[in-house]
Length: 529
Image (tube, rainbow, N blue to C red; front, side):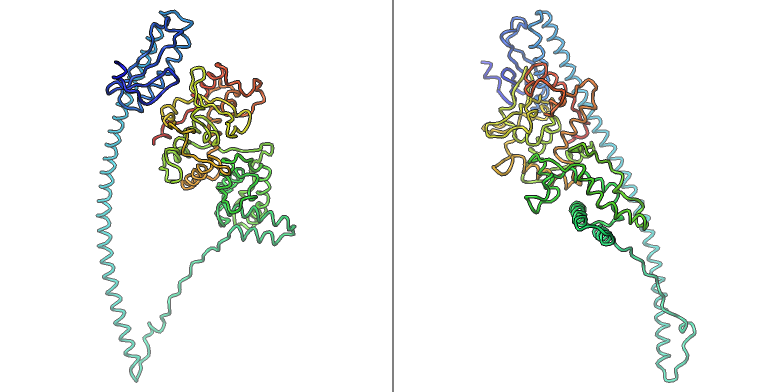
């Protein structure tokens, strides 16, 4: 009878957890495992979620799912009284959370009302300033009208004088011109001197022509010059500063080693995108150092001639022992990316949001996210995980260390990542398509880069940079997070790791990884979308 009252909806956690709609409010129900029902004293656990909103219910259900998982793990080693006490404590904690949420909502409403009041005050002040400015402008216009009238009168008098002089000249017995007019000469005004443009192509070419260098050196210098122009155009050398050169350095370090080979007509941004979608190796720092050394001598000449004050191509650090340098996202760049509307058409905004959230809260590679199947989302030791491993169709992680499990972050559950699992679809992000010659993530990588470029973000800030962002945040957040846990989470090879690539299957490792994942945090203002 009760099954007729409750409507099964929304979200399924494992095989025993279920979110149900009771009349107008959601409830959380989870079946107690048979082995511990005697200790717990119940066949199933029910909790009211105190909300009729689907999104809020899912967040609270996620919390209760975690708490009941803790109960089920501890129950076999506890007495019924201890279990009852734990249930009581969990219920009190849950009620405290609900109370905090209500207070937070009240505070948010108060802040909203305060903001509206402040906006109204600012608008009123602005209107007052506009009225004052209008009055000042009216006075200025009135004064200007008076001046124009005086000038018109003076010009008319001058015209009358000239007519009189012309009449005198036209007479047969011409009189000498008035001395004032005879001495009057056309007024000469100095013309403004325009500074000649000095494009980088002209400066570097002239520098090479004035030096005794080999044809090979000239060829390499022109290659570097063309790369710079492809990124920034043929800029005036006086406008090229350290910031410009730094962006060029980041772009070069993000290019694939096969740049310029095999595929013609690709832009610099499209070449950088290939690194993501095809998992290519990037140009070594030593090669970038060589590019800089080809341009720097031309700037030395400019400094000596006092055309520019300094040489921005000097003083850069190139760690030649480091194979790839990754660029993390700054908080400002993340805010710009996430809070700006997605305008691309080949990929939906829903898929864009989901892919970015996955990268920010898992550190997974673009190819790993794009190829994540619905069947890869499973529960390990009571913890929901994304399991990354080889597929029957031939896809596999980049390295052996890439075979791993990544616990699902609570923020992803609140975001609604499980809603992306569509019935009848194989992949979590079913909108992405692949072929024999095009990876599943290629179209997304291209659209992501175009969107990023339209926002004015640097060339070297890429989707892969989310992995570096996650790594940096985890290494800075807490001292007790072990390096091997971070390496395992991200699928990095670690020299101190000796238990093999499948060590994530043990319960203790999953718990450690879950603790690591939950330490990935971002400022709340970034996600005001």
